[in-house]
Every structure is written in structure tokens, then in C-alpha cells.
Length: 194
Image (cartoon, rainbow, N blue to C red; front, side):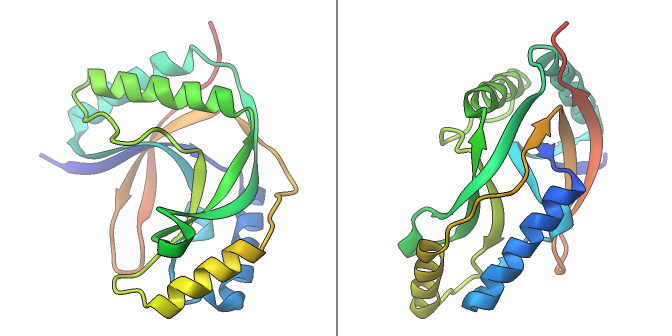
């Protein structure tokens, strides 16, 4: 049976991806070119990583997302600030922060989490932290690069020029390859309280 690597996400409009791609370029030009950068066209906000599942389970996930989507109306988010997980001094993931209706985003992520746990998926080990991943550190990152990351991220301010209307949540599959992950939308559920 086919195994799919799945996650639930908020997809972004093309103009937002373009703007965030410019931010990535600016960071690369500041000496952060040795990181593994997400493709601007694949940028998204992950609500829940699910791991590997079969097609039948993917259909059940899609049904649950339809249920979740009927509990929310569309809302607005924006992008502001840069940071790193787990900390600037030990950066493994570079991110841009989110602003706007974060309470609604947190509630949406919480409902996705609860519904996926009902389907048998592992509960998240950490609380949902609203962010968008821009890059990841490669294996064996040097202390000098860690210092460069902390210096660059600590000195740059970032505020996106546009807001994003969150109107759908999507079930996505990803295929990993040496050139990066390829994403495919399997299902989209429109936010609309009935």
C-alpha cells in the first residue's frame, strides 16, 4: 500500500511567497548562504506534521479537516520579526514570526491537533508556535556560522507589507529528495462556519 508523508498546512498566496523569497535572498546575502533554504514556492505554515500514512488514512484526515473547517470563518495574519529554534545561539530553524489574529490561528491549530489525535496520531510534544520556516541548519553547522546567524537575525527587523487571508486549510504530502521537498495538495477545506 502506498505510504504518504503528510502534514496539515495553511498555503500562502503567490505574492506573499515572492516577498518572503526576497527576504530569504537578503538573509543569504548577509552571510547565511550555507543554510538549507526552503524554496519560496513551497513556503507554508504547518499546523500539524503527521508523518507517514496510507491513502485510506489520508481520506479520513481529509474528512476531519472538513469538520474542523466548518468551525471557523476566514481570518487575517501577517508576518513580522525573525528568530530561530531552539534559540538564536543554537539555531537549527530560521523563521519569520506571525502577527494578526493569532488567537484564531492558535484555536485552529488546536482543533486540527485534537482531531488528528482522535484519528490515532501522536499528540504534539510542544505547544503550537506560530511561525513560518525559512531555512534549516545543515548537519555539522560550525560555531562561526551559529554566531553569524545570531548576529544577522538579531540585527534585522522584518515586517511584511501584506496581510494574508486564511480561508482554507490543506492536507499536503511531501516527497523528500536531495534537491528539497516536493509538496502536493491532497485536499483543501474552506473555512466557513455553517
